[in-house]
Image 1 (spheres, one colour):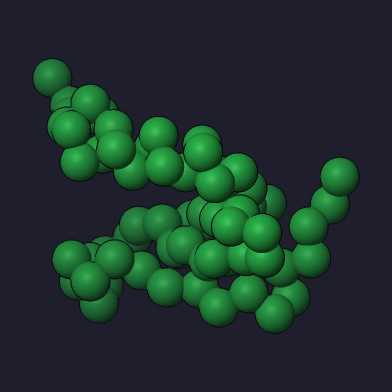
Image 2 (spheres, helix red, strand yellow):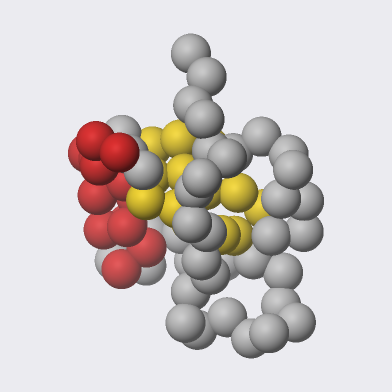
Length: 68
């Protein structure tokens, strides 16, 4: 299945500096969320269902993804 991202409105976290490489996020129809690499915006994006995105953001807030 392919998702048309041609009209997606991408944004970075407000915590990202202007010259930092990070991910960009776009909210899509149906509560879906797209994520792409800011260094390579033409590469494939990851598409998350609403529940998947909720679980991911809860993990980020809970520091589940910290480096050792």
